[in-house]
Length: 202
Image 1 (cartoon, helix red, strand yellow):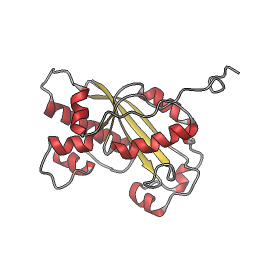
Image 2 (cartoon, one colour):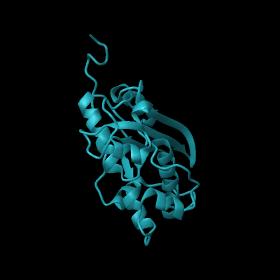
Image 3 (cartoon, one colour):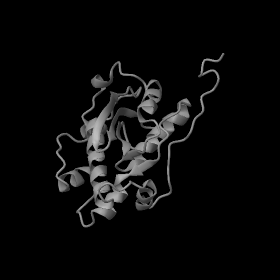
Image 4 (cartoon, helix red, strand yellow):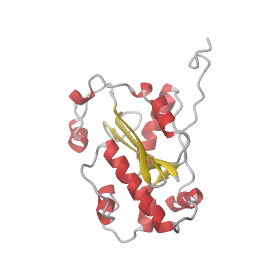
C-alpha cells in the first residue's frame, strides 16, 4: 500500500485566520518511508508566543521561506492521489482547504484518513489518544514532537500498526473499512481547476 502521512504546524488553531508555518509529509510504500516533503512556510505574520512554545518555530526561522501559494503545487505533486493520513486530520485539512480555496491552487486529491478516531477503536483503554501516547504505547522509536516532518513520520508508523491490527498479513487493505472506522463520511480536499490564465494559455 502507498500513502502519504502528513502534518502541519501553524500560528494558531483557526483556519482562515491563523496560517501554516510548516508542512511535513512522508510517502510510505509497502511499509517503508520512501520520500519526504518538508518545508517551513512564511505566514506573513509574526509567530505568536503560544505557538512558538508548542512547536519551537520562531520568526527568525521563517525569514525568506516560501509562501504557501508557492508550495501547494509541489506538495500536491508529492502526494498525488494517494491516501492522506493525519492524526486529528480535520485540523490539518481545514488549513489546507482554506489555502487551496483562497489561492485557487489545486491540492492533493487523495482520500483523507484520520488515525485519531481509528486508534480509539483499534487500541481501546488508553489514558488518551495523543500522538505521543500512541507512539509510546506501540514502542515506535521517537524523539522530537510538534515538528511537522517528525510528527508525520510517527503518524505513518502508527497507521502501519493500525493496518497490522486490522488486516491479516498479505490481505488487501480496504480503504472503505478504514473510512468506516473514523465514523465520518469520506472526505477529500476541495478540487480546484486551474484557470486558462494560471495554465499560461493567455
